Image (cartoon, rainbow over all chains, first blue to last red; front, side, top):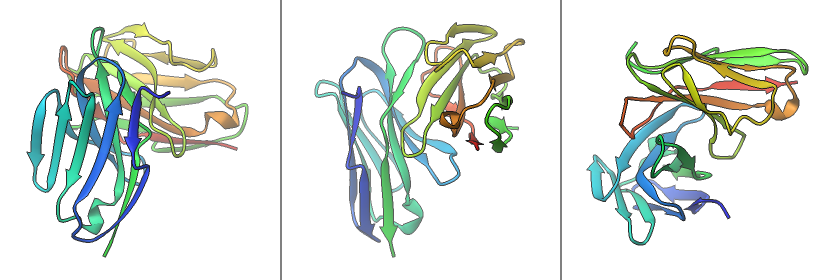
Length: 110
Length: 113
């Protein structure tokens, strides 16, 4: 079983829809990243959070440490949001080793 | 530059050829990580440096893979006698001391024919 599980793996939405991507993990962590990866490989960090909720524009990320679960929400989705969204956890202890989920491929259709 | 840079961005190698992939982290970033991302998969940890010291190389898939960071800044990932299964995007990331947030480079897409 992977230490980080994401769902769904693929998601197609109509422009304007509210989108939720889920991440569950089974290890102790000090922080969790949500990352965005566009075709071509480059990764951008959207959020790093260790508790509660963060909001940036149309993006909202939440984490529940007790339940070992995080969600990424996109409000009023737009075709430019189409990308792969990756959940990555920073393992507690040690030197910030990161374990990644497989990613959720999102396509937003106009 | 302000971000992490990697070169080359794309590399096509013939099977058996040696390749060298370069990472320029953000100035002052103590920690440097290399990851391998196969097509359709999430990145997988390869190795970690703190300054010039390679503290963890447990993710390197074989002894054909070698990484160095001799002056604690630029890092090179070398793959000897490349095989088709080495085809992947190789990502480099750095972070400041005692910070959790990692800053990723654009990656190098390696294709081994």
